[in-house]
Structures are given as structure tokens and as C-alpha cells.
Image (spheres, helix red, strand yellow):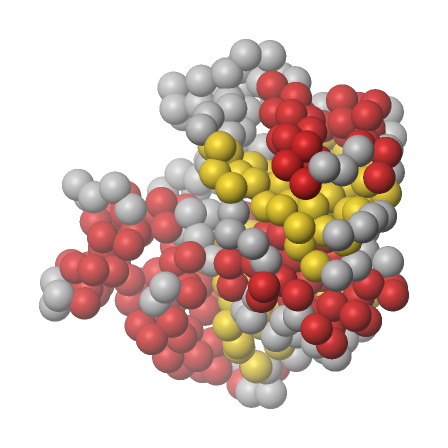
Length: 335
Ligand SMILES: [Zn+2]
């Protein structure tokens, strides 16, 4: 395949994925567990290495990469005009429970480290990047008022209002996971008590059940008829739907696109309950809102990163040909 190429970088709480694409489609996809030890340039340096590895893998030079899109967990802060990651799930110095993350970082200077070698770069919150991708290529096509919410280990989101992507001053709008839902609730990693993420995230579901490692085990118990699992999941569904209703009261949206592993793996259990509770809230505002699953599935992270920097002529071609569906299998690198 020939260039030019785009690079897509997806920085999550547990792994980093780097993909390269040309106009025909995705050429290579690589992922590796995220490194959280050492200095606060560890993650930018890991991304740099993975970009170099991906280029070598398909025989492309760094100067053939015309732009890099970075979809990252947030939030961000802006310092000296540079977007800096200040995410409590990566920065031990910001985390509430300091023991879990093995570093004392408070800032991750991604842009200044990577731009030395990789040129033009666009960094967005992963929820914002995801809604761009779903609106271009997935279940949000043609929608001017659409909100993406991921229900996963945490809660993330992004939104178009009146056809415009909303950012806010530091690119953090809308952080729906951190709206308050309960007066006296459990702690969230952000420092809030009783916000949406503290009540409904995959971590919260596992915590409420106790003695399990993941929310998936609680859903397995639910499917096996466990009453405690059913109670916890039903309560999470109500809180999740109320979070959506609160956002809708502010944004007056047309469509909610729901993604994330907790939701996608358990749509049959979750969607009917979400709809029942959501449409009960202020019917005049909620009755004509559509709630849909995301459509890009396992490709959402890569497509989100590419969407940040993709030229219009590529977009048209990718909408017609859906090349991500024929991407080569991911290469997994040992950490
Ligand atoms: Zn929070």
C-alpha cells in the first residue's frame, strides 16, 4: 500500500493502541499494556515507540505520516497553549486512592513530546473522538443533535448540539460521568461522592457486589438468577437512565448512542430498563429521543482517533467502502 498515512492513537486506562491507515484502509494495528511507572513522559515515550514500531512493521517512514489523531481518556488541562492529560486513572498524584497507580504524576505532557517527531497532531477526549467517529461512520450518521455515552470501566461521553461538536474551554465537555445523582453516594476517582460514575460504572457494579474482579462476573450471576446481582444491576440501570435524562434536560438531544463493554455485552439486560426509566422522565422532553447502541464496535477506538485528522476525500471513500471491517488482526506487544 502507498501513502500518505494517518496515525491513530487510542490511550485508555489499561492499554495503548496505535493504528496506521492510508486512503484504502487500516494497514496495521498494534496494542500494548499501558506503562504507568517512571517519569511523567513514560506514556508519550511509549506512544512514540509504538508509532515507530507500527511504521517499521509496514515499511513506512515517519515523514510519510501526515497527521496523528490521539483519542485519550481525560480530563485535560491547558498550560501554555498546550493540551495536557490530567487523568486520575493514569496520574497517581491525582488519584483519590493513591496506592493503586504506581506513579506520582499530576500531568502527562503528550503533545510536547510527540510533536517533535510526528508533526501535526490533534488530541481529543476519547468520548469526543468517539462521537465524531460514530457520526461519520456509525449509528449517528446525519444526526445534528446526538450524544455518545460509553458505559464501561468508567463513564465517558461526547456531544453534538445543533450540528456542532461541543468542547468547552479545555476540551472536557460533557463529562457526564461526573454529574451528581445522589446526595450521599460512594466515592468516584475524581473526588466526587455520588456522581454517575461512582454509582453505575463497571467498577461500581463489581464493588457493590463484592468478591468479584469485574462487572462481567456480576452480569453472569444475574443471568444465573442471583438476586443480589439483579438488584445491583437494576439500580445501576435506573441511575444510568437518570444521567441520560439530566443530560437531555440540558442539551435537548435527538439521539443517545450507547457504547462501552458493560453496555454492549449486556444490551439485552440493560436497554429495556434504560428506556423504561428514561421515558418516564419529563415525557415532553424525552418522548422523541432515540436510544441506540453504537455501531463501530471493536473499531470505535481506532476510528475515533482517525476521525480527528481524516481528510474529507478519505471520509467519503471510507463511508462507501467501510474498510475498517477488513482491518488486519491486531498485533499485541508484550509490555
Ligand atoms: Zn466522578
